[in-house]
Length: 389
Image (tube, rainbow, N blue to C red; front, side, top):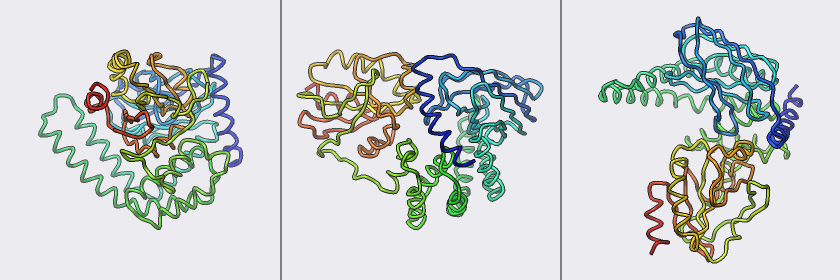
């Protein structure tokens, strides 16, 4: 079955692109839930999980402990998220085929702890991972539940600021306790994954473990993550999470101010190939962006005005982190400047340029040297310093 899952992962990435290009109408997925302990009229939403971001939330409500969605995905995705409004929990992950039925059961308002069941092999695989975690680390799961409870209380609109601050401090204390499980968690999960076939679920978990060992600084566990990375089949190494892990276990030399730019190949919305170095006799500004980034969206009108005022001096290029299908939908509308995508979550490009938040702007001189790096808060200060003068 594991070999089947790996092949299925590759096939669905291909089919997703084909579905987007043909604009075909996809058969609705059915999601039926029976969840106890959820107040009537609680708002529940489902969304497509494309790459690292959720898109296209579709709301409904829970009544008599039940809910039902008939949801048509925007592309041939098989990855969805489900969440309850007003209850601060991580979403429930669901893998489902178009046209299939998923049954969801659970107790309590934190949907992260619910269970989804259907005939999708990736969902069955995910459930095996989750059950293994619950069995091996029940205390860690309980701490996470308490964190969700504190965060939900702290998000009540009319709660006094002092009470919110107290709840946040309590949450921080629980997170410290939870971090005490990290070393054992990484060790146990690495052992669990060692005998399993690489697929989308496996890559998600390896990505998480890689970030944990970076945070802990444990060089022994980092080497174990590196060895697991080396088992990834070559045909899966260009997937986003595989590249992210590679850049953790084999970190690139991050570019600094004054360094010569690094060049990469990307594609525009028509599929034409471009190089970052192709801009001549102008300052190049790279904007690292995603449709899931609120500040990126609110910068759009300002950037339109900026491009209009400085078109003779500057070439602005947006580098998207979004999955190809999300990016091609252009949910924010097309811009007057270049928008490019490497179809790999820009993972290598972000690692090389040291991008840690969105949006990030990299200013590159006409002689291809990095002259500034900033986020949206300092963008126009850098414009005044290097362009408007």
